[in-house]
Amino acid sequence: MSARTLSEPLRNPEISTVRAVHLDGPAGRLEALVNNGAPDAPCAALVCHPHPLAGGTMHNKVAYHAMKVLNAPEWGLRWPVLRFNFRGAGLSEGTHEGRAETCDVLAALEWVDTEYRLPVVVVGFSFGAAMALSACCDPSLRHALRANLRGLVALGLPTQAFGHSLQYPFLSGCTLPKLFLSGDCDCFAPDADLKQVVNTAAIPRTLVLIPGADHSFSGQIEAMQKSLSGWLKEHVQ
Image (cartoon, rainbow, N blue to C red; front, side, top):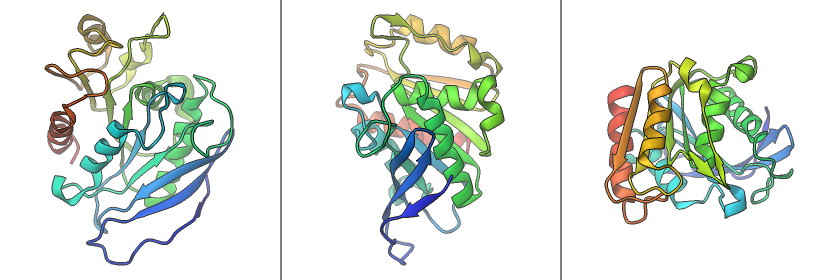
């Protein structure tokens, strides 16, 4: 997928800079931002935002603070990170569908692969986690997956939403390293439900429940970041 750079980054590699880009998505142009990483970064990353119908965009606070772990110098990784708006969110073209957004993830992954030619870690929050896992693990979509994936992170993966129970049967065949990171007070993923989902996933898998945290990690963002950083440095870096 091609992209058009809208603003040029600063040339000083010690300064964290942001580029606005457009991705060619399957339903039209997707609005996106790239946080530039270190020149010698060993990995790149993609961050997927929560449900657009609940106001989710790439500027969501959980998505933003996850990006900081992956990119900001103080966390020690300094990877380049792409965030994008799903179809119908922000300035992205198209209309929200609910399942077809997995193809938006694939388009974003293809852009990251073309731009960096590095192993990729995919992080999704809530709806973004569900779409990311589907795009990366569902056997029916693997023919379209071009990126060299190194790991998957599902923040606040929902097991219940809009009156439906959500299942992820494709996880049983997904052998990538996987982190499931949620609050133990997440109303969209009761402990028992989430543990059942994680137990069906292929090894390697890690489940971390942050005590007292809700779905959006309110008041617990730093705890989420520390857990994410620790897992990445142990299992991916």
